[in-house]
Structure formats: C-alpha cells, structure tokens
Image (tube, rainbow, N blue to C red; front, side, top):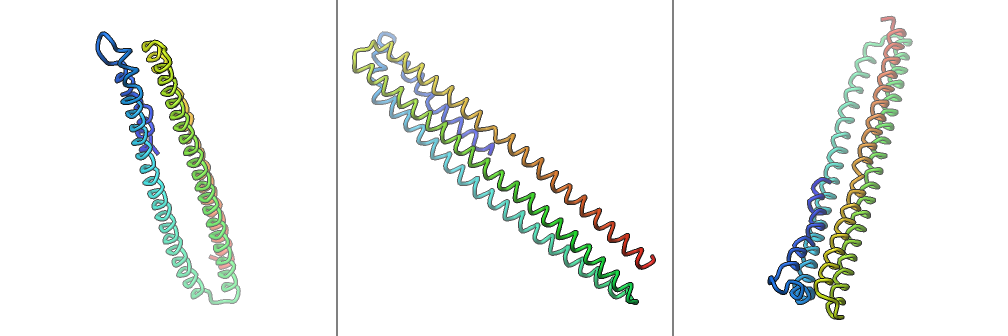
Length: 245
C-alpha cells in the first residue's frame, strides 16, 4: 500500500506546475498573460498531468492486486503442505503405537488417544482457517473502502479544478480584471489541493484497521495453539495412565 502514496501525492502535485506557470509572464502584463493562457496552456497542462497520474494509479492498483493474490495463494499452498506433512507424521506415529499395543486394553487406549489427537487437530485447523478467513475478509473490505475514499477524493479534486477553470474563463471573458481572475483561480486551486490532502489522510486510516485485524488474527492463532497443546497433553497423559507407563 505504501507504493500507492507517491502516485496519490502526484495528484496534489499535478496542479502545482500550473500555479507558477500562470503567475509568470512579462513584468508589465502578468495578469493579461494569465487570461491569454488560461484556456490554452493551463487547462491542457493540468488535465494532462492528472490523466497521467490516474493512469499510474490504476497500474499500481493492478500490480498490488496481483501481488496480493500471489501471496495469498503461496501462503495457502505452504499451509496445505505443512498440514499434509503433519498428517503423515501422525499416521506414522499411530502405526508405531498400534504395533506396540498387545492387550485389548492397550489397543483401546491407543484408539482413544488417536481420536483425541485427531479431534484436537480438527479443532485447531478450524480455528486457524476461521482466523485467516476473518483477516482476509476484513482486509478486503478495508481495501475496498480505501479505494472508494481515494476515488472520491480524486473526483472531488477534479471537480474543484474544473470549477476553478470554468470560473477563471468566465471571469476573463466577462470583463473581470485579469489580476482578480488570476488570484481567484489561485485561491480555488489551493483550496482544492488542501481538501484533497485532508481526504487522503482520512483514507490512509486503513493502516489502523489493518493493525487491528493483524492483532485479532494473532490472538486467535495463539489461542488455537494453546488449546491444541492442552488437548494433546491431556491425551498423552491419559494414554500413559492407560498403558501404565
């Protein structure tokens, strides 16, 4: 997500070059120069820069979505492989126990032990899957909310800039003093930039949401492990008592 920030900041900076651009001109007629340039150079310059930033933002989003899916698929595959290895090791352990059980009571104790362990494993898997699913769902929702907030901020910025440009053109064509038109445009653009920055700060609160999701998942995984260890220890204790050793 941090890689998106430079692109977003680019939207704020996109209108920046237009500010000094329309303020420059001859030392004798800077205001007249503004009205001459507002429809031709400034409008085109701002529009082109914002379009470029929007294109980059979409590209970054696509890259981010692809990487997120790849990481999730990789984690899921590693978890599946880990579980397969553990399942195989348990089966081998059960086989050894069954071979060592000679009496009916011992064989029954081994079966009980195996059932207890498998029940604990199933409970742990369910808890882990639930924690991961909740995290994934929460993160997806946070990403969508952030995207919505960012898009809304961009739309507001573009609308404000369009309104500022339309007002400047109207002022210049209706006889408003060029100096007054220029200052009004400058003020409108600056206000649009500040509003966009504030909106983006609010959108970046996703970091707090992600931190909460991470902490919640960590607590759930820890509890699943602790519960599993307790169940396994009880099963081992019961087995030892049943075998008399």
